[in-house]
Amino acid sequence: MAVDLAIHDALVLTADERNRLYERGTVCITDGCIEEVRPSRAGDGELEASTVIDGNGKLVMPGLVNAHTHLEMTPLIGAFSELELTEMLGSGTALFNRLGNGEFEYLVEAGVELAALNFLLGGVTTVNSMDARPAAGAEAFGEAGLRGFFGPAISDLFWDQPVDQQFARAREFVETYHDTYDGRIRATICPHDDWSCTRQLWERTASLAAEYPDLLVHTHLLELEESNTMARANGGEDSVGLLDDVGLLDDRLVAAHFRLGDEEDIQRTAEADAAVAHCPSVFCYWNPDGETQWTPVPELRAAGVDVGVGIDDHYWHDSYSMFGEARQARLAANLKRSAGQFDSMELIRMLTIEGARALGMGDEIGSIEAGKRADIILLDVDKPKFTPLTNVPAQVVNNAVPADVETVIVDGDVVLRNGVPETMDSDDVRQRVNQAVERFMDETGWELDIGGSEPPTSIETVRDLPKRGPARLLTRLAMQSARDRFSF
Image 1 (cartoon, rainbow, N blue to C red):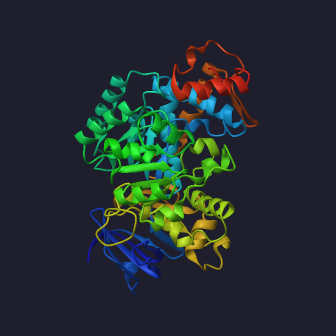
Image 2 (image 1 turned 120 degrees about the vertical axis):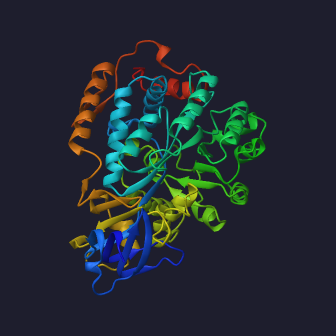
C-alpha cells in the first residue's frame, strides 16, 4: 500500500473515544488525511511512502489547539511582567486602542510572525485568535502552514471607532480571509466581551452572524464581576441570558473564561451546545481578587460542554507553552478546590479533541483516527527526564515542554522537521522582531532591555486615551495609580 507519509514504531496517543495508546504504533497518511492507525508490524520501516518517519523514542499525538489567544503584542513579551495589575491594564488598553486605529503596524506584523513561529515550535497546530487587526495573523499563520480562526474585535465601548466602520471591517475580513489557505484559515465574528458591548451591538452582531451561518462567534464571557451588571443594564437577565435574547447562545458560540459561571449558566450553555475556552495562566498571573470564583471546568465538562484550553495573552505571562497551560489548569483547580480535579487524560483531551470540538472541528481534527485531517505532532521522549516512560498522559501534561516537540504535521504536510521549521525562517523572523521593538522603543519611550521593562514616564495629552467606556475607565485608573506613566 503506497501512502504519502508513514510513522512507524512510535508511541501513539490517539485521544480517540477510547483514549487508545499504542506502545508501538503506525500511522499512515494520504492526501492530508489519516488513512490508518494500528499496531506496528514487522516491515513497517519499509512501507512504500514518500516520507517515512522512524518513531522509535517518539510520542505521536494530535496537534495542540490553542482555543483562545491574542497575537498582536507578541514582541512585548516581558514588557508587562513586573507591572502592577492596574498598570498592566492601563498600558495594555492604551496600546490596544492605538493598534485598533492602525498604528504600530510594523509591531503587529512582526508579532504575528513571532507568535506563529513559537506556536509552531511548541506543537500548536490550531489557534483561535481575536485581535484588533487580524489580517496579518491570518496571513502569517496561513503562510506558516498552520490552522487558525481569526476575527477583528468589535465593541461600541472598548473602541474609539465608529461602529459602522467596525462592522464594515469585520465583513471585509470575512469576505477576504474565510476558508483561505486550503481551508486552514477561517474567519470568526468577535464581539469583544460582555462588559463593553451594548445590547444594540449584540443585536447587530447577531444580524452579521445570521449572514454567515458557518462562522463561529468568539467572545469573552463571564470574565469580570461587571459582566452580569452590564448585561442587566442592557435589559438582559444576565450575560448568558442577554446572548440568548439576541440569538447568539448556540453551538457557534466560543466563550472565553466563563470564570463567574454558576449552575444555571452552565446548564443553559450546555443546552445551547456552546463551548468554553479555559485560560488559567493569565488569571493565575494577574489575579485581581483571590476570592473570585475559578472557572467551573469540571462542572462544565460534566454537563457536556466542550472545554478547550487557551493561552490568552501569552505576552502578559511570558509563556507560549500549551503543555504548561494544561499543567496550570490542574494546579490552579486543585489549589482553589482540592486535589484530583482532573486526571491527566482529561487535560490531554482538553488540549486536543475538546479544543477541536469547541471550535466546531471535532470531526476533522483533534484525535488520531482514520478519516481525520492529519494534524499530528511528535515529541522526543527518549530523554532522561522521561525515564522511565510510565503514565504517558501525566508525562505530557506535567513534564513536556515546547522544546520536546520534534516534528509537526498539519494537513499531512511536515511544517517542522527535527525541530527546524520548514515554512518559516527563524532567523529572519527574529531579526524583524528585534528591529520592530527598537522602533517601538524609539517612538514611545518604552524601555526594554535584558534587565527588564520601564514603560514611558512622560505624558503628552489625554487624547491618547480611549474617549469613553470601560477601556477609558481602566486606563484612567491605571494612569492615576501609576502617576500618569502610561499615555504613549
